[in-house]
Image (cartoon, rainbow, N blue to C red; front, side, top):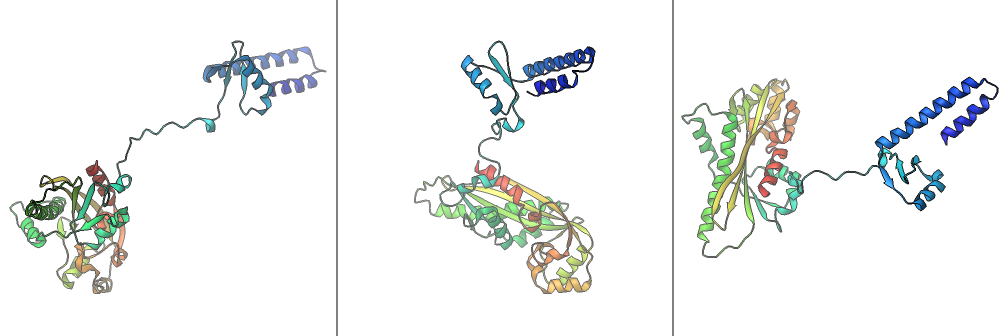
Length: 329
């Protein structure tokens, strides 16, 4: 249609002109038409049509959004706009790698029972934010944590790395609770268990690492002030160890299926003595590693953060989601 319109307009404008420009123009138009025809035939699919179908398309050509070209072999070629192309099927595998796709398998009605071996309110808050509220049980580990800390720090391998230190603590917490469940299960072994669910025990520990020196929870306000003074204006690392143990009540077995440590870097602002003392007087630092809580008032002391915020808070949400989903699989 556009080609005919252009030819008519040019023919009118060239009626009083010489023959040579007209011949030159028609030669150019013919070459352009052949080029377009060959391009469409080369790059667009062809579909066999009956003569009735071709007549129908030809009669309704004005209603077609695409451009059609008919060949002598009763085939039609057309250009499909990008927006009309059919979407391909997703190549992602069935299921998912994140816990969010397996949430209904944890808790009542699911195949997995999850136990948090910690009484930390921050870790419970993180699990709740992950969508697990009401789907897990809190059972504090019976481990004597302070005794284990002294054992690790005073062991013959005095050069234990902080990342290894916190991972071992996380494993021991989960293992101690698992051992308690084993003993309880042995005492009640008179009744045969037919449970098809598995129990995952989640242990975790968080420490602050200041140039290789491990900062645990402060013993008193004075030690809390000293810790914050050492952190003020400096970078430090926060390591959170995570351990997942599988407790099989039917076979009375306990196995560590996954453990890891995640690290984040934190930069404290320059703090005055009044700032430090006022923060310590709030009481917030007393039950936290490194004497501060990033999710609370202590967040005001943090100038920069590199890594997972939830690692500093007490549980690396992303990596924990991957670990739980893998364990369920």
